[in-house]
Image (cartoon, rainbow, N blue to C red; front, side, top):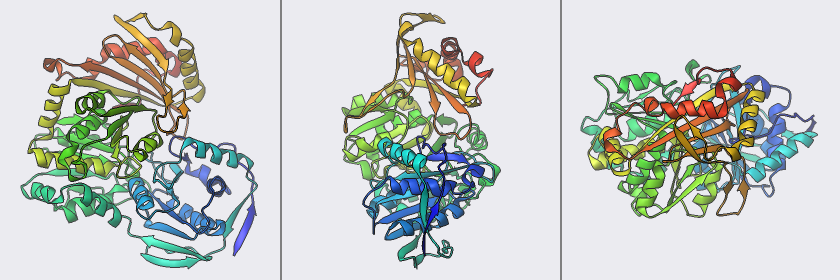
Length: 542
């Protein structure tokens, strides 16, 4: 029943910040998926007889690769696999299952917030036994294996019925199909005051949650409507679809504009939220106010003690380097540590495991805590609801009061998507070569105080990660950051992060793009964005 199948290496299987992501036709090439899965196993040690978690976000090609992964896990010696019913497991739920059942690790099939469908995106990533994404040392080992692979092992088994909960046997390995929602919902109930949330909804509180036909739908439907009593229809687009209903499952102001428009309308609900393809990102919009992801991290941290799971306080806050400094001021006031890491949730894992941080966040709409080792979209929504219930104030009141206390960080991200890789790399390379000459120069009436190529020195394991983004800091606290993203599947995405700190309460109601206009122009002056990319404006502004 076990076969060793000859194969040849592919040269393009280097994992990015969250695993290997390519277009579906690339993964459909002969042995492409099998090569990468075998390379994951070849980079691991000590899993014989152990348990592997497998699940994904339900996108196109999810079911086929799950069957391949089950057969290969059996052939490589795993004793058991746990698979989400229907192939469904949100990324944070998969992390929780790995941790709760102390499994060896897990394979998560997702391309996160990227589109799905026959010609769209697919992804495979490995999460380690702590529930978090594989560290760089392990992903480097996987990539090395992909370049030298000559065969993979698989079992000749009939397709497993992944739609029926229960346990079956395949090639001597147990295959357990689990309810993908139950364990996660139980965890949320342990962290938040569900009785207070039930009272909130019973009082007439109105909410809109858009699951974007992605993986969070079943989780939100069960928790918000079934367990908390939110009115039927609170959750929209809650059925996961292989192509996400033809939409882009990225919860930002471009792809969830319909939610934004509703929340800014005359009959807006009290609170609006959305999540992405694999359930690890969130969008928060109060009645009449959008909460930026950077602000959300800071505000959740400032109010976390209102939820039962965080009543003892926070050990620290961690944020990615491009994320605004709003959380830094909260950490300072609370007297706890603040950690600035590269982009990529795996960098938070060491801080969480060492109990140095409790809440972590990224400007790219990822927020989470030490309850799992991934960012968690629905967790952020539930913490916001817990804060609203405990304070008895509107989202807008909480936001404006926070700004009055800590000051406001005007912040925006400009994405230039699918730029020719050579052009994007040339921009970064030329800018990197000029860093030493920038300090002291004047741009648009602003003086550059310092400029560097961000390097992170991990305080837990001592490792160093270099070239994590170029920072240009101005006198007065404003800054511009340039970074190439590793989450796309074609070309390169240039991300430009613009931030200005405003302590004056009378200037907290400006339009964000107007407040940042001189910095936006300065970013183009400094990096030559238009000349390098050929783009007159960004693809997406958030």
